[in-house]
Length: 319
Ligand code: NAD
Image (cartoon, rainbow, N blue to C red):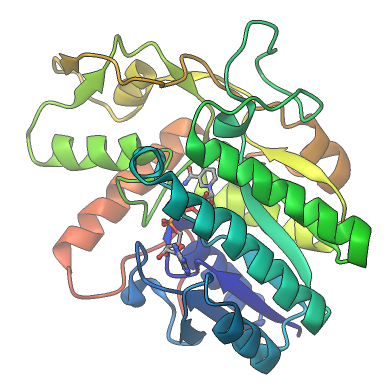
């Protein structure tokens, strides 16, 4: 079977992808600088390279050594608030880092599947249809959204200029086992933790703001489908449904009284992605109901607390 390299493979989505690839019998290499990822999330069966993707030389050497057929590029500065505080760092990782990945892929003859963002990319404007198809203009409302859109642009540039086979996946708000509180859908992990600790969940704003919550197991299947599909596409990966913060609490079985705090500046009010193209191209759709996905997330938080020193369970059987 062919080799796959995952940048950001010590992170939430990347480590679940690593498990799924290993289950398929693939050789897996992980590149991660552990700035947000954890070494313990990387499966023993995967080769680990502790590298910052801003270091073009080290990255090129690791890719040349691994000789992957596919690079799944997930490493990113993925925290919207951190990007606001330090936009230069955000761009260095998400733009320059992505260029370094594309250069390494070009040299190695690898294809690239890039983890981009839906909601933070489209932004929010009056004419924007919800759920949003890929044909809509992107108008990011954050530095993070902007740097991811630049990354997308470079991916397609390498396709046009050098024939590097690239696919861009615009993810909804991904939740599930191994999630940490800092990502785009961090609220699910935060709520699980607070409810388990007997604390009241805190809602910023009125709780009616919506997102497209998509289960990490379904997202990983989309990465595998995209790898097998025709390159050159930009494809939404979401459920197509708006779920509010209050719906999330209900889905987690919380029937107490949440705390309400003032809304966060710059937060989108509504977001959902039209997944029709993923269905058309890959036969992909999200299979996991919100209720089942939330139950699996809650179980994984409980399991991780029970054995803090061991590898936290993911969405796939681990090796
Ligand atoms: P994550 O933070 O858990 O994973 C990202 C990984 O990248 C981490 O392990 C981190 O250590 C690593 N990393 C960061 N900077 C690096 C660098 N300079 N060099 C090497 N490694 C570096 O985040 P995630 O939620 O798993 O997200 C994975 C990807 O999906 C990201 O590209 C993110 O922008 C994108 N995405 C995530 C969501 C979501 O809801 N989680 C939504 C849309 C897009």
